[in-house]
Length: 283
Image (cartoon, rainbow, N blue to C red; front, side, top):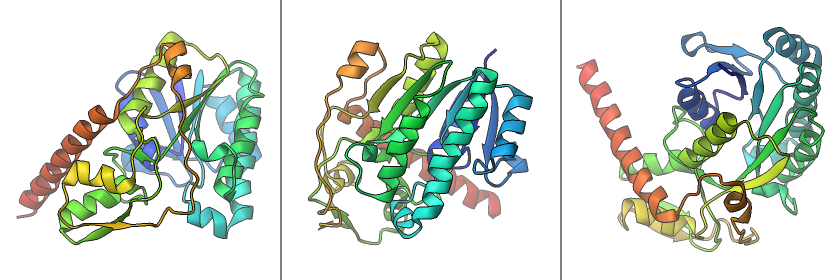
């Protein structure tokens, strides 16, 4: 059985991948702060010696590197911390991976293409570093990502959607910027295929739906028009439309917008049942 190390395993995407992959592979999960209840080990990716000592000791076959500062606003306010975590942290992971001949799957962002923000710049630099992995790597570029994660407290947009649904309080969502969303389930399916087929070909692959949307349209497609207001909070972002030729050519799983919306509706239904069951347990 392949041994896989996940960095950033307490995050929105990391915790989801940890749960899904644990059923199939031996997973070592790490984050900045340990979580004994969920078997997550503390690993500060900014600390070169700690990273090398830890990784050379456990010797994973594959490293899925998600550890990063991902809040765009926080990155803008803290460029040095962003560089130290996202860029130097990636340098440390790659150095350790090359010592033990491990392969790397790097979770990047479409913000790395023509980067303007501090977050985008850090992802661009990190992608260049990942390209020095000697045993093989894959770079997955995600857009704004949606799906039910074990981490429902994260700043990610889907967690905001959940709060809108549960609270019934009106919320404003952008209706100006068009983008191709990423489905959390799709990310897992792509990674699972790469691991199973052991295809680490040095590709940079956008994991997105073919269709474009706005946040307002996406939210109303999930929740309907009740309590949803139009806004222009993303009016300063550039629109990019990406083809999916890389996914098609690589025979990796695809995801359409309609399927994603269906799954997101089900995610919210499941979450509401979880909340209801917890409430019943407390009575």
